[in-house]
Amino acid sequence: MADYDVIVIGCGPAGMMACGELAKRGVRVLGIDKKPKLDINIRTASGYCFLDQSFNHEYIRRTPQGSRTKLEYTDTGFTVTYGGSMEGIHHSHMFSDTGKHWQVTVTKKPFYHIFNPHQCHADRFAWASKTSAEFMTETHFRHVTQDESGVRVKVRRLGKDIYLTAKKLIAADGLCSRVAKVTGANASRTNFGMKGPTIEYELTSVECPYDRGDMFFFGAKNFGGRAGGIIMVPSCHGEGIFRMETMSMLPASTATDLIEYFTKKGPYAGWFKKSDVIETSGVVIEFLSPMIIPHVGHILFAGDSAAYGECLYQSAVMAGYKAAECVAGELDGKPGFDEYTTWWADHFNWVREPKAMADYTKRVLFPRFFSVEELDYLFDLSNKYPIVMEQAEASPYTFSTMMMESFMQLPGVSDELKQRMQFIIDADMAQVAQVVGQVQKAK
Ligand SMILES: Cc1cc2nc3c(=O)[nH]c(=O)nc-3n(C[C@H](O)[C@H](O)[C@H](O)COP(=O)(O)OP(=O)(O)OC[C@H]3O[C@@H](n4cnc5c(N)ncnc54)[C@H](O)[C@@H]3O)c2cc1C
Image (cartoon, rainbow, N blue to C red; front, top):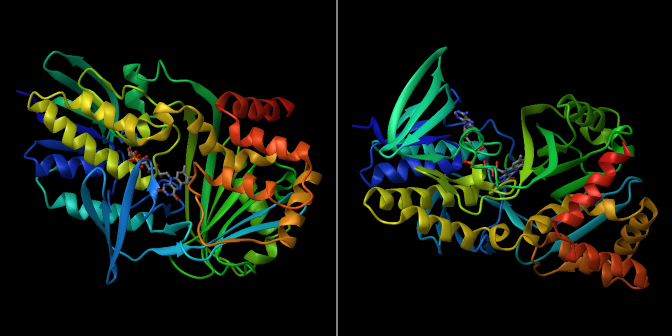
């Protein structure tokens, strides 16, 4: 008899949700994670989410309940409670190489809400701990073999190899999934060659003179001649506190150099004179095309392990829920893995429409399509004609289109520039990867 019905590798947002949901359904489940503590976040995450709007073909309805927030996944059909309130963010900014500023504001409906990633982990872990789910921390997944009856998993814990068996395995070990690597599940995925480290600092007492919103800084002058970018997102910890993450190249030390230069020596260093770094985290990001069939043998992939880049917390939780439902079905002799595969394709835009991968990426890559002078011209014009709307379609999939369309509407923009903007709106992943490749070759 197998040690467990299901082993879940990785207890992040997807894996923890899967563990709790499986246990609720009477399934004997073990969650394994290399982290020593499961109720804190150590992976970089700025903390934004897209609620009260359709995102990844799911509409999450947010209902504040005192100091907590109810989140109803109206399509996939479940509810979770977040143990805090969520602030809506109405402004978005960009700063060019030469310090020009671009801003867009929505007056009625926020672009997105912000949350505390630690709180999400603590909430899900507290909930799953009340079920019969078992957890093994400080345990590294090493390998898995499969036969007709299920999986045999090799893990390493405190210097010892341990072998465990289960009927099914959920791989929720995130981006750069080791389960995907050792099972060959990445073989049919395209690697876009966009791999890089990111470091995140959470900084207090940031003296930023602009409306509270996210800020995207690009251009070598901001980073002492280094290539890369910085995104600053308001922190749920309050006014003047920001989570700041780098977009940088390997080796990983470039990420630290970039953020240190930006906050201590760059043109905006004055904003950080009184700041303290209250938290740091880091992760290496790699972009593969998504799995189209997110299962192999007895193994189902949930969350970032099968995604293009990232699912975001909200959709990783949703993938964990659905994975649990479908694996429980599979254990009952139903075609649960097939059901999950259809749900996966129905919910993540990039599975059925490869262009959605490009759309997701363009928000931070669009400056590479313009010269410094062209961007200065466009930012100056949009300062003269401020972009203020009641609400905007501005999820990661749609933000760059919204931005290009707002540029195109500015008076005096040449047809040549408008055509370039249309090209950006229409560009697919091959065209985006080509632009990235040109920049990388140029170094
Ligand atoms: C720079 C950056 C900013 C982001 N900002 C946001 C944001 O603002 N909002 C948002 O919603 N999302 C954000 N994300 C994305 C978000 O963090 C992920 O989409 C989400 O965490 C995916 O959840 P997951 O459960 O699939 O994987 P993960 O959260 O990566 O969880 C995987 C788990 O598996 C464990 N694990 C991995 N390998 C092994 C192994 N070999 N053995 C044992 N355990 C293992 C890890 O310790 C981890 O607990 C951001 C990501 C990055 C990189």
